[in-house]
Length: 112
Length: 109
Image (cartoon, rainbow over the protein chains, first blue to last red):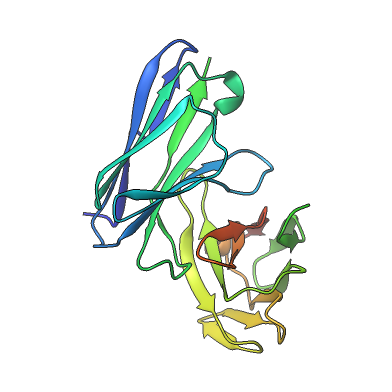
């Protein structure tokens, strides 16, 4: 098992669809993150969870809804997205907020 | 205003050349990380620097943290095609890492 696994790797959805991105970490870490990566922009932090509690919500629109049922799993629920939400969504984990992040391979989202 | 500025933005070189990329900020960081990201993949952690003036080596890669802990550099000696990728620096001020835009490196055989 790789350290951080994201599914699906690719997702195409319409603006009225509802879908979810899944992230699972096998590293025993206690913090998990969602980042958005768009072309020519720095990685944008979306959400941070520590021990299943959300500790950071970086002014993300409500059409993105995170869920962390346990310390190994993180979801990002998507609904009524906009074309500008098309991007690579990266999940990461860390231990004790050391600053060292371990990323999954990302979910490439295209909103039509 | 971007917290972390990386330069150059793009770099295209021949195999065997040396190169240096920079990560600069006006802020002081408790630690700074360098990552490499290949197309279609997530970033992979290369190194963490913590102490001002610290130098770390990873095979042909040399990382330096500025004395004031505001900037860092990555030097690659004798670049190889396998070094191709996006090099990202990230600084941790509190507990949340902030990323630069990255330097996109292409090493031609």
